[in-house]
Length: 260
Image 1 (cartoon, one colour):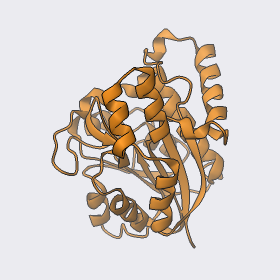
Image 2: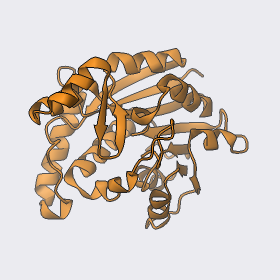
Image 3: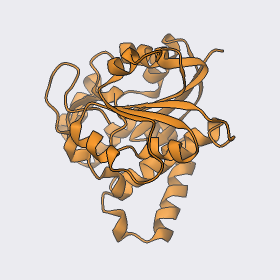
């Protein structure tokens, strides 16, 4: 998650995102994203990786990586998110730091030092997405991996059409912009994200659509059986990898590698 302000200074209320992982929508999004990342990397190889989660929010992704034996730094500019991350149970993170990508780059010996960089739900709020991706790449060591998750344009259009939100659909069709619970944002096509990543010098390993059939499942996970949650997860995981369906994801996840 990004922090409390847009890069242009527009105030945002990201506290509304607190507890998102405890909803069906948030739980499925996180599980699918993690499963796809673990499938394409050596996260389960026993090798200890150095990772950084930019805009890591409450820390669910960072905690998962730490539980696999890796060393993880979480950075987020929102005070409420930072406080929630500090209250995580389980293996403590290597560091939890208020800030953003520029904060990360200013850390001692940060540039070119990370095996894995996560940027999940951040790019959609940036005024200059290419510059943001370029900065993320600077953190990677040769052979390192970037996981980039952001709003998908086709999925956003489908959502607006289903909700009969003509104004949002018109704006999305014009330039990809829209407004969500946190404020102004922008959705991107898979082709556009590919351009950002390839322009930054990375090689794309694969990409996925996240949340295709269960966008309306916003109820708490406590109200859903474990059997149903598991079935939803597997359905969404298969859809995320389907070349005929993945472009419809509410979020698009690209996994790319820096040349060794």
